[in-house]
Image (cartoon, rainbow, N blue to C red; front, side, top):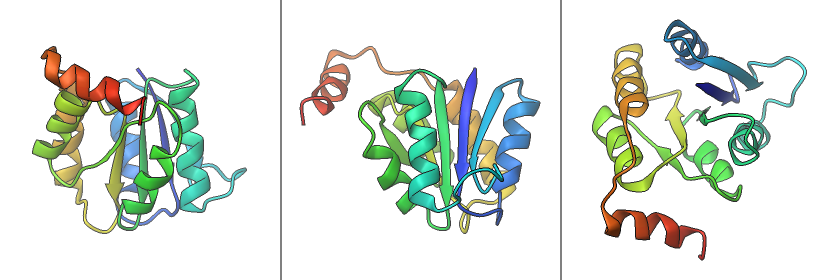
Length: 144
């Protein structure tokens, strides 16, 4: 899978996200502080990763900032993106299952390497629900 990763700083697990994804066999595209040729502010970096998903250059994205909130907000401004701020594996699994989330937002402040592994396990194993109600909710997002 091709995964776009953006962060506004190299604090916390920022570089570890890229390493873990590559170790798991994914192709990683980097933005923000991970790419010296780009602006590293959270809004710009997260937008680039989200646009990779919405425009088909990446299957999914991971966006990071100190709290994860700004990265999530920026990514969700891009049409077709459903970014979820996840602080644990249960939330990541639910975001993939019930929300068909395609962008994972992480807090660089709160996410430890152990928790990151658990979140990525759940996120990458997650599949969207086939329940008609869940699918209707996700479809409705495009009309809001």
